[in-house]
Structures are given as structure tokens and as C-alpha cells.
Amino acid sequence: MTGSHAGPPHEPAAAARERLGPEHYDYFAGGAGEETALRENEEAFGRLALLPRVLRGGTVRDTRVSVLGRDWPAPLFVSPTAFHRLAHPDGERATARAAAATGIPLVTGVAATTAVADVAAAAREADPEAVVWFQLYPQPEHEVSAELVLRAERAGCSALVVTVDSPVFGTRTRDLRNGFHDLPPGLAAENMRDLPGAAPGATRDIAMCPAGWDDLARLRELTDLPLVLKGVLHPEDARIAVERGVDALIVSNHGGRQLDAAAASVEALPAVAEAVAGRVPVLMDGGVRRGGDIAVALALGARAVGVGRPVLWALATGGEDGVREALTALREDFDQVLALCGGHRPRDLTADQVTPRGLPYRPMRGERAW
Image 1 (cartoon, rainbow, N blue to C red):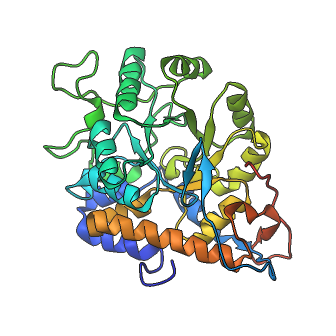
Image 2: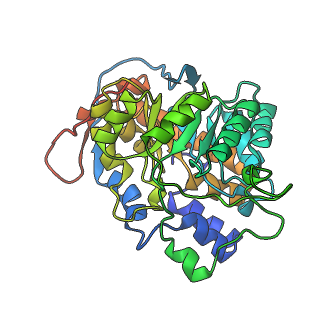
Image 3: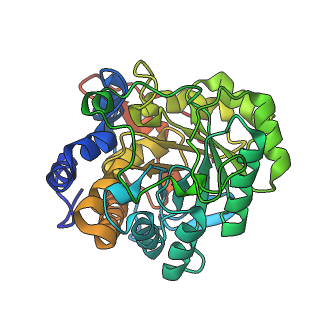
């Protein structure tokens, strides 16, 4: 990032490592298997270069984008990540207040250490119009999924993000090595408390479920919230999802934490955007660390991008202030990159401005999905 807000992308992780216990740092930092997909998410961006346009004139830029009927101040959101209270005592509340203060939408997850109602309330302390979405793993028992959806609605969440890349748990090598299986005393996945089938006051385990398209249809029957499908990498799945009435897609390989052989998110993005052909918004996450990464993703068809680990590192080292500073720095860095690329609005970035680094000019394939 540019300016005084942050150093190179590896520095926040190194600072967080000094603050966190090794098993908790490894939980946040680690990926599946040999962590190939984890590394590739960042390295894939490094293999792409931007070709700026010149003599476009104008000094005023507008970084706003419209997603599901709401204007966001920048093409940026906070991706769902688990267990924020492992990083800082204020946990998801601090993250929510910081995101709302910067106008950045937050996706809070079913595996949060703060209940969705409390996360949404914290966001609205900073901004009554804060955008909060709820992320759900479909659960084997339909009544459990139904209760979680109901809680998200009551909390005022404005979209339901359904993660579909997790029919089973990925093999987290670092967690196995550290013997990290349970949260410390006093912490729990609070959204899983007092659900059908559990004793009063008890929490249930979050289950991975090999859901099908019919399960998605049952979720649609439960709620009028927009459905956002997270974890799509194959263009045919994107086409089916649009045909099935999904309202938006998030191209994601789960931060490299599920299938270690999965493609990097930014590598899968152009084909998904082409398959969708502008019918619904295409978002993406995975490996975004700087404003140039945001610009590349937008040029290749994303409407906005999510960040996960950078928020956790900022939370661990600076709490609410740290998250606010990190999001502000990333937004400012994107604004500068947009200007240097000759753009005035995010949609000015186009696929012919992206080319493989170190090779003769070859414009990337990509279709504007908005």
C-alpha cells in the first residue's frame, strides 16, 4: 500500500505473528495441504501487470460501485473469516465498527465468536446504514439452517452468503501439527448457540454438508434476502447458479483453505465473469493485498473484491483502529492506482489493461460483468 498507513503486504502478517499465540496465528494464516492454493492466490496477482491508459483528462474520481441495490464507497468488502476474538478481545464487534466507519460492507460468518445480532448492532453504532451480510454453511438439518437464516434477517442483514465449496473440511496441516481443535474457554461460535437439537445455552458444531442445488432452492424458500453464492470457480457452475436465480456470485477458493489443488481466485475470475455475462454481480476474494490487485480484479470482471487475512492482521495488531486504518489505506491505494491507470470510475478498468508480466503484450480474457 502507498502512504504511511502500511508497509509491504507481508509486514502486517509478521506484526500479527508477534502478538498471537503460534497455534492461533497458524489457524488464521494457514491453508489446506501443502498450501499451494494459499500461495497461488497472491502469486497469481504477481504474474499479472497493468497497462495504464494515458491522456484521459479529468482530476475527479468516483470509486463507488452499486451492489444489490446499494452504493458502496469503494469496490471493497470484508470477507467472512472465523473467530475474530482469537485475534483481539473485541473481535467481530471491533471489525464491524471499523468497516462501518469506513463505509466498507462486512460479511460476518456463521463461525463468528460474536452473534450476528451483536455484530450488526456494532456496525450500526458507527453507521446506521452499514451494510452487513451473513455467511452460512448449509447445515445437514434443515431446521438449523432455517434458524440461522431467521437470525440473520432479525439482525438486519441485507444478503445471505451461502458458502458452497465445503462438502467436507479441508485438511489444515498447521492445525493438525499444532493440535488446534477447539476454541479456548470463554470463546465459542456464538451463532451456533441455542439451535434446534442442542441443550439450552449449548453450542452445536458447525457441520460441512455436501449440499445440492435443491438445498439452495430450499434456502431460497426460507428468505427474501438476496442469495450470494460463495466458492464458485467453474464457469458452468456460474451459469447454473444464474439460471437458478442466485443474485450474486463470489469467485473464491476459500482462501486456499479447502482444496489445495484449486485454481487461484483471480485465475478463475475471467471465465466466470464471461459465463455470467453481466446478469448478476460477480465478486471475488483471495490474495487481494493492494490497490493494484483490486484494479486487476475489476478489469477482469469483478465488481468488488473481498479481503480477509489483512483484516485479521490489522485487528490483531491494532484492534478497531487498526482495521479502520487498513481498510482506509487499501481504499486510498486503489484510488491512486485507478488514477494512474487513466480511470475515473471503477468500470473504466478493462481486461485489455491486464497482461501477463514479463511477456509480450497479450490482453487477458474477461468480460465486464456490470
